[in-house]
Amino acid sequence: MFGKFELTPLLLPPLHPLPPSPNTPHPRAPTRKHDYASHLTTALMHPLARDAHLAIRAFNIDTALIDDAVTSVAVGRMRMQYWRDAVDATFSGRAPAEPVAVLLGSVLRGGAPLGKGWFRKVIGCREQYLGAVPFATLEDLEAYAEGTYGSLNYLSLESFGVQSVALDHVASHIGKAVGIAAILRGMPLLAFPTGAGAGAGAVVFPLDVCAQHGLRQEDVLRKGSGAEGLRDAVFAVATRANDHLITARKMLGDYAGAEGKGAPFGAFLSAVPTALYLERLEKVDFDPFDQSLQKRPWKLPWRAYRAYSTKKF
Image (cartoon, rainbow, N blue to C red):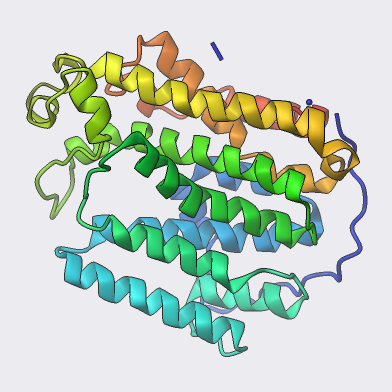
């Protein structure tokens, strides 16, 4: 269904290690629990950007989990505002005693040229869709993916000290693919939430795609994979994600040139688990509720290392 680069040293100062503290746990643990793919690829990152990568991904986890953890949109907005204030304080050299902020502060003191605006954009995009608000169109979903996962990729490139329009375009397309796939991957968990305090199920699938394929949200909540039009709708959305991966691969090979060589390729490793998920989704005939998709893919470590070694995703 669904480009060659060598590792080169970077002219960035070494990052200060995060000081151990019994009161400030390292954010590596939640990354391992909630985003195993990013935890895995952290080990493949260039040492000079490794802490930055972990801080960026841990920040993503904390902001992404807010909607699941709160009981109202108002409380969710308060949590988002907390993160805005925390980001502002951290970039001003006054990081609050919060694990992700402490690590991010350490990264910034080490000289990593990260842009505060990208962190704030992630917060703003997530806040816009608090309360499991469905996307009106597939283009709205793309814009959300660009604003969240695309921004994370821009930050990853910045952690390598890279400023490149060509690589930014690659990062943008990968971000859109990752964000779209994340909505597909999270569909079962959102439709049928479990655990203490779990609320009613929700479907955030693009409404225009649902209408085009005769998919009704209430049918998804009642029937799951048996909902009429589900697989056709999922195929349409998955195809858009895959198209972005194809474009990113072509741009990296055709336009990035020497700029894409070396350590900055690490910023694109999030494409690997996304490509693997889309392949697995195709094998189950685009049924996002298939139980096999909820299992950790055993191929991921090998695929991640192969991508790192060949500089191809």
